[in-house]
Length: 250
Ligand SMILES: C[S@@+](CC[C@H](N)C(=O)[O-])C[C@H]1O[C@@H](n2cnc3c(N)ncnc32)[C@H](O)[C@@H]1O
Image (cartoon, rainbow, N blue to C red; front, side, top):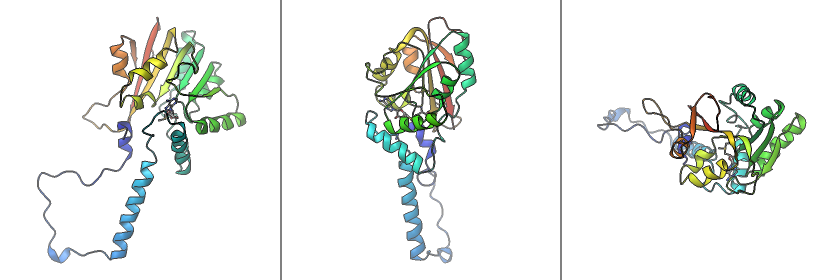
């Protein structure tokens, strides 16, 4: 399971105890009627299966699996509920305008309407995602509620797709999935699309870590190792290339 999703799932079993809990007195051990116990077990099993449907596919390059992921999210009533949370488009728009940046690539945008919002603000926006199902829904929505960004179905690791260069690249909750194995090929593939002067915005969501542990920004180590100028959570002053990092939890 991808770590950032673990927080969405019910804990498996009670917390570990130093000593076993004392058994209740024998007279209080009333076995539930067989039918009730079986129903509860079946409900729990069904709920576990249902929750598994929220997991991203293991193979991040499997477009059909991502289509299934998004169609489950819709069927299960999540819809776009998990998209666009923590997006501060006004801050993004102000930063892009202040620095004279115009072209934007949103990678792994899924059902997000952030590309549409930035298009409406006057930027030249392309949304790239592997799932034709997700981008098909965005396309239908934008046809009803223009404007629409340019929508491209393709693999972010394929350099021939949306080669750029773009002034700004925005990814949210996508490149962290690649950090489970070796993030470098995906990070390089995306960074290679950025103009010499531009912003690489990377939003990690860590839904698992709880205080006092420190939540993790999954792509931050790659930016640090590669010597990027890092803006942490808030925009800085753009000289050449900058990585603007956002970490959300909960
Ligand atoms: C966890 S979702 C995040 C969606 C959106 N950014 C958000 O925050 O709601 C990851 C998205 O990345 C897309 N994706 C996964 N692997 C990809 C790849 N290799 N190339 C392009 N898109 C990919 C999926 O289709 C999915 O829409």
